[in-house]
Length: 359
Image (tube, rainbow, N blue to C red; front, side):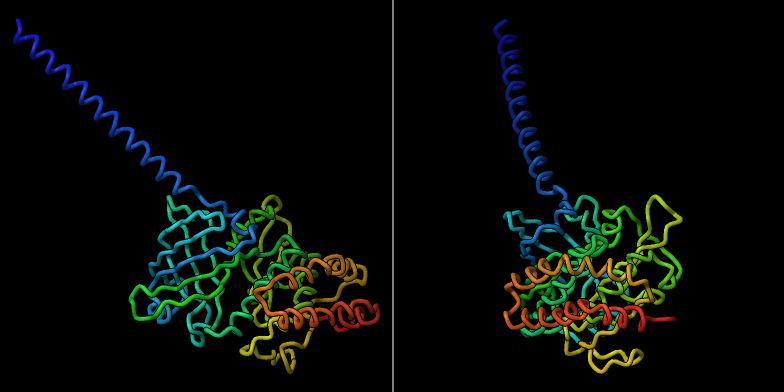
């Protein structure tokens, strides 16, 4: 009898111990799961591009491999570590590809396409983003980057159908160990599908469109904006630095043009930018209106937007202290010429109507 009691006591005690260990390990597993889940909380892609603070980022990839890449849509492995202003840190794998013909051949590191799409990744919602970087290591190269960044921000003030941008401070680390780490500012350009979605539109494959086969009012805005920044390096029919997006609910609506890539414009005035031979300009700072004729009422309606946003535009530039005071004054002086011009009805008529394109 004593023997049976002893056996039962032993079995009961062992079961209790096992239950305690089981509960312990389940608790640990649950906490690990919750911790892992917290680490993988998806980044809000809209908030990512509306926040203004600079993100500290480390990009680790084979720099030499990136420089040797040929063709588009060729990607290699990389890792990004992002440290957000609220101290949140995210480290994820990313696919990295070179883009841009001229810069790939002439710059220290080529412009980069970053594919964040990976199931379960905290950065998955960012999609596929262009990383706009400085061409060289000098402070003057970074100054050009800051100017282009500000142009995107100005465009956002004038029109919602525009690409948002987020400024980064990037530490580049070469995975092969053949290049020394270096740090520069850069900015990410919003995913085109995300830009379309937040404007009630969609992107889609499409045949070439004529300039005047797009939404008339927005095309007028885009044409005047390109004149405003002194940019002639764009074309709707050639799909050059213009993205078309389509109304999600109305298939009959004409597509909306969205401008991007402004480093060749007069407001940036990059040393590598060359005047447009076809248009006949002698320097990139020379403004030429490349829009088609509109009525005076249509032109003045768009110019009113520029006038109403003038103070916000100048405040944006003057408060951007990463850019030198001298560079900020050069930018506002260049824009002063535009605002002086549009005060004259005769000059508005001459530039935007009489001298507008006919073909």
